[in-house]
Image (cartoon, rainbow, N blue to C red; front, side, top):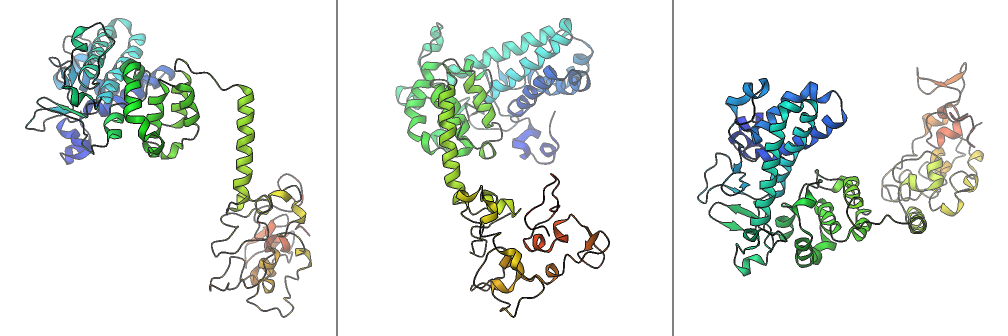
Length: 463
């Protein structure tokens, strides 16, 4: 089962056409489909066989009791494609030859594959208990082996397990100080990845994705050592793309501190496999987490409100200035892209008195059809600029650029009612309640319905 890009280019999709990394990539699909199968009553019936094909590509066993689906697919797939039964873990390499044999770096993604297969098999088993039980057991075996193998070969520390084999030191003490293996090959092992040797990369590529099985993979004592020696020194400066993962790492040893950090995440800047809501859910379901009490929440809310008010008062955006927002202005206002601040700026203190701000005061005295001989380059000589409370030169400004309020000849003639509306151009009829049919509203650049608004009230610029 390969991708189209993988067929066309042997390096496409990370070598998918040569069976590279299948368990990494298909694991995400299996996990997602398991969730869809759990909550969507028709998903398994509609897409079950297609999802089975993905699962068999990486977790197939010919020893599973045959049914029609298995028999049809049996000739296409090898036994658990990536699993090395001797080593008790997987290798990501497909048909690519390497001098040191096959290798794998993202051990946690391999676990995600078998976890996804286990969850999908669980959904399948509930639908057809007799036929799917063997597949469920096989997926569980693959998952258990992978977790044990990763703990033994990637997590370089003594384990709490009673298994003396796992507690025996595999690597020399100097190498073990790195705590996490980056890339494990058949004949070598490194503390680097295919994309860099930064310790953050080494540790987090073997930590992602974040799911319910993450807590099974990482032992608390190991995490304490890893966080204090590797993550904590760089924690404050980790780029946002990786930040969600290091916060989840911290959450398993200090969920309450991690919660506060998670509130500062920006989902659109995180890695595509994680989101702020996912991080918050993971933290809130971690042992030791205590939900913020209501008094703290109110305090935080008050503090945040104060910060917001302070930041918006200095914001250049129209929507952050109450008076500008009331005028339906958008984009940059304080200042504009040409460096001019509109009269509606810095009006947080007057937010409750919109009629008295500079953007609206006095505009009813402006004659839109007669500029009284004013200099055409001045703000007062252009009705829309004057209506915005601008002074000095506007058309153009001293830098040579014209503000958007310039060239208002067509606006000055708006408001000549014909029938029950106005014509803003030769043939464009505008309803009488439209902002464009009221000269002073049009001069302010307002659009839509003003006199009255959809809520039934008239704006102060209405005739």
